[in-house]
Image 1: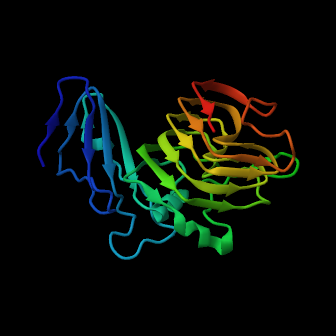
Image 2: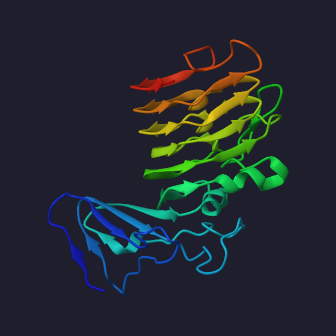
Length: 264
């Protein structure tokens, strides 16, 4: 309950739940502020998440972010990250596609192989595309910082669905994040990390195997004018329609790539 003053321009980081156990938050006393001209990063478990009991997929987690804007003074920039600590938290990111998130630990997603009658994890976002390549729905538009943690053993098995990945689409920022292993199957625009990207992906990777009918990629199925930098993919990519993959640049790829690779 004491004020924090930072006379330099360095970032101020305030974090609850350093072990990624899903409990603990950041609370300011009345009138308490962080005074700085630099960045203020807050990492917390939101009140909308269940504090006790067995984790579950639900419609309330992350739905309401805590507003810390009144606790920052001096011109500093604030980002308040909601912590994602298990695969159920990861699935519940769908409740708030414009939120700011950070992984609190590595996540084993093995259980997703039994979810949804074998369809597995439901990709984050509702972006979809019909047979005429007309889009509907909403991509992820927030900030997702993996903090150099990763998700392993992820299953997404949706062979008739277009725009498939851990994220259906990304128009926000994904950084410092990886999918170390898993199997991701879709129809058109299938990626190990995102189905379609028109946002920014930085310092991220995927080692998941990717299978699709057309336009599949180890990291992104379709880079729709987005930016991908310092990122790579190592997983196998299989397309039923031969010659339509995106291990290399092809017709359905636009935007910026910087220091990226597909490694085998």
